[in-house]
Every structure is written in C-alpha cells, then in structure tokens.
Length: 480
Image 1 (cartoon, rainbow, N blue to C red):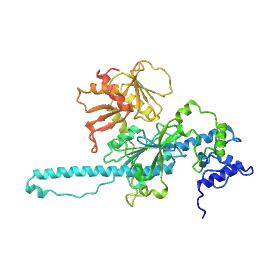
Image 2: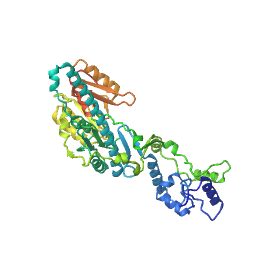
Image 3: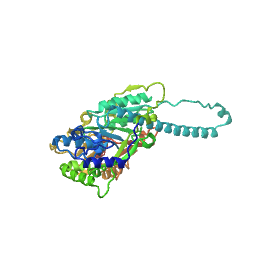
Image 4: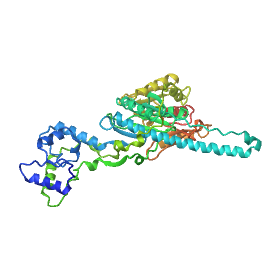
C-alpha cells in the first residue's frame, strides 16, 4: 500500500509541473498526479465536489457562461449544507436533505423526544412518591397497611407527525414516519397540516411526547426541513456532540474569496502562487447581483454528520416491535378549538393574507361560523379592500404573523401584548400575552387548560390571536 505523500513533496510536484511545458499544472486537491486541462474542465462542468477547494477552479476558459453560473450555484449550496434552526434543521431538497438523511435525523430527534419524556416521567414519579409519603404521614397506622404500592411500566409516549404544503414535504414525510416507527415509538399521523395545528394536536393528545413537522418555512422553495417540539410546543434541545454531529460556523462572505489549498505551502517568492493569484483575478466571474450578495452574506451553523459506522446511538431501537401508526383527522377538532377564540356575533371586516391553501380554507370556515366578515386573499394580491378594521398577514408558518390596523400601520408585538394584557386584566381570564423583544415573536399562554407536563400552554397561532383580538374589540376593551 502506498503511503500518503507529504505536502512539501506535493508542492514540489506542482511547481515542477508548472515549469515543465509538457506537463499539465492542474493538480486536484488530494491528488498525486496532475490531470490534463480537458479533465480539469470536465470536472468543473460536472460540478465535482473536490473542485470546491481547488486552486484552479476559476480557470474556466472553454466553458459556457451558463455552465459556470450553474456550477457556482451548486458550489454555494454545497457550502451552505444542512443548517441548524431554532426548531430543527433546514437543507436543500435532495442535494443536502433527501429522504434517507431526513429519516436519520428523525431517528436522532426521536432519541431526544424519548429521553425528554423519560426525564419528565421520572419527575412526575418523584412528585407522586412525595405526595404518597405525605399522605402516609397524615394517615393512621391502620390506614397505612391498606395502602398498596403498585408497580407499573411506563408506556411509550406517541409522536405526532405531519407535513406542510411544499412539494418536497410528502417525500420527506415518508422517511420520517418510517424512522419513527422503526425506532419503536407510537406514531400519530396527521398528514397535511400546519405548524400551529400540529402543536395543538400535541397539546391535546394525552401522553404525547412531542411533534415532528416536515416543513421548509423560512427558506427558499427548493428547501425542506424538520421542526421538532415537545408537547408544549417548545423546541426540543439537542446536544449535537453527543451524537457525533459537529457544528461548523459558515460565513459565505468569507468564502467568496479564494480558498487556500491545504496541500500547498505558500512562500513569498513562490512563482506558482503568484501565477495562480493572477489567473484567479483574470478569470473571476462578474460580481453577483445585490440580492444574491445579500443572501450570500449570511452566516449560519452547518451540521457535519458523522460516518455511518459512528451512528450507533441513532440506530438503536426501543424493542423488538415497530411502533404503531394511527391516522388522525385532527382538522375538525382544530377548527372547533379555533372557533372558541372568536366572538359569537360582530359584523367586523377583517383582511387575512396568506398563501397556504389550508389557512385559506380555515378562514372561509370561520367566516361561515361567525358574523365576522373574514376576507382571505393572497399575499401578492394588491387589491385594496376598504373598511377593514384589521389586516392579518400569515406567511408559510402560521406561528408567525404581522398585524395592521385600519390605517395600514403595523402593530408591534410589544404593543399588542401590552394592550391584550391590560384589556383582560379585569376579566376572569387566565390567558396572557407575551413577546420576545429580541426576535419580536408573540405568543399566548393559557393557564386554564394546562397539560400534565407544564403549568401553562404556549399558543403560537396567528388565527387564534386574531380571534382573541376580535373578541376584545367586540367588547370595546381595545381599539386599534
């Protein structure tokens, strides 16, 4: 077997190749022999991954400009990779996040959900044991003998799974459901839903460990991803290093310049270095547009997945049998839950802007159930609708929204939360509004319908917030 050559020897081969006229100077990263110019252009044309770190990748003379633009775009997407987000991960569909990769990530999230539910069960068991001890201390000795301690096995808590309206979501959804069942957890299949409805399903299902939502919201149309939350709708913490996943900070602004070759030792008098720098400056493509530059200027944390042989913790399963899959038509139940947030009667015109077909159907249903004149239009529809008291804009993720008054002025999340809390302060209501100043996000807490795992439930739902605001405006408690 041949041993790896030292870097100094590879650098000497590249320098010698550049000085000899009959030897090609194109040396691929990690290679030991130069390649011909034809092979160099062929690899660039095929967007060979090794070319991303090659010193000669800007020598594209002989390739069409359209080919150069396509390969540059592919190289940029490869540099981005799989991104970590607040609720899960995002990646370009098929190129970075296909069905197989999504199923492996779903298995990782199942481990986190299972361990989180086990920790919650242990906390509840300790609380029950403490209460039982307190009851025994208050009871008589005759009553103590009647108390029987029964041993019980904790049942596996199910996971709610659904997907959004993106064309890539059903394919990823198949891999996610297979991974959840193979891991051994029971599965509640919601099918097509939204982020707000799947969180309400997780809250309403008894003994639910959390939810996995297949969505690419917040990313371009060619992207997809996974959002994972617990039964209260909060993000599930993932210690990536425990699974062998490394986090790499990627700044595309810094990557726009030349990438140094790890096999080359640079020296001030190196003639080959000077020649490469000159060729890169001469063959560099034209600057990108302003929109592309703005997109490329972002930085994020990229997930570097470990090799397959180092994923033993992911491949473990809870038992010999796969988890059971149960189909649940939760949409009627969710609509009835939404209906409770809205007033009974009030002829008020409200404009709702959304691109999601499911959200548009819900708005039409709410308009039939109430006397609110709910008018739903596309976000790109610029038609002026007069006499609208409110305008609610919901983008792809219905957990995040923006609200405008009848003058078209935006209502900030801080102002909305303050008005709601002042308006319901004198009422016998256990609903409060909260906001995050840093991100501007808004949510409601409902203490009257607390789950067994949390003292309050966090409601992140644009249509539910619209119903609460409409109810308060009907009672004359707030005026926007």
